[in-house]
Length: 258
Length: 258
Image (cartoon, rainbow over the protein chains, first blue to last red):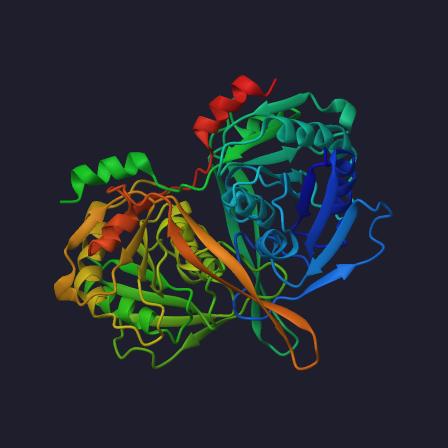
């Protein structure tokens, strides 16, 4: 039987340590095709490139294994998945992985995340997919826990599969592997980014802005959320689906909007 | 009593006819603040700008009414909402509108849409919000129906409000106003973009790609979806919420992922 085929992308770009950690975690499970952005694309969500030409370049020397093939792309994480699925591969991959992101994609951050959008895109093609994030924004974060946790999750996803359209949002606490208490299946916590803009003047007197902010968990006492799991030393796994309909609001509106 | 304050953005940029149509539809309902992207940002989803400085410029002469104030921004639709809400306004707006998009944002297109991401962003701030799209991609599309339909929807949203976190995805058929049969509250249809890449060579022999594809409605016989409403001459209104958890899959996984 042929080894499973695993497509990997990320949003921090080809040079990110998190991508390297994910490739290393995936290699024992099968053949790996990496299609990663040349540049960083954090916070790019489900953006696709339609106004400028997309370029794809085969990269040599990323990994010594002949089971790892690597391409870089000038587009977004979602472009990478689309190009990998429709142009580079003649067969569908068995699993698509995205990450490991440098920083959390739990709670409401999922809607801003390029990492998770890439996983969602693969799920829309009907492929089991996982986006993985480590709760450490540092470019030199310690991805040791990914080896311990990621390999097991990859094996489970390949063995058990996921329902069509579903991907997993996997967030990993910034802890040594030995201190991680296990994996919790949970729901997306209600949360808010409390944000402001840092206003500055450039050397020519022109005004510009940088976004800054901090996350607030709106459900601090709930114990079934990703935020609770992470705060308590667990890896948080949330199944994500693409139907954004607010069904309760739909029923409410049907009563009131005459 | 002071007139309601309405914040308007779009993803086709300040020069789009769809933005002009939305400003015209909103003006009778209150004071209008436009914060729109300088350039086109179609397919930018919930992307935010964190790697380059954001600029904001007040624009004169867009509208003769003293109740319309206009800024342009070098960022994405979501950047425009964030800057409008946190930097330009001291009070919260009563309503946020996004669009009118040139082209459909029904079904699964909602997750790629910059128009809808801007509306979602406002909903996360707790402001009632609507993204509007006309099913005509042409830059010179006829937005006549927006005047007829949009004004009424704006009045309803201001009068009735929306639950916290919810925005409306409003899609308008490409029909003369007289042929529109009414407004249907509905759910997001299950759909797929069947895509391929058009491969070309530049004059220097370099390979590049353009995305192309067509939409497929996966639920052609369902009559409660946005796709059904649009195909039958109705304006489709879908309430959109930000919790992406797949609750049914969460229960299934709890049984199988041991």
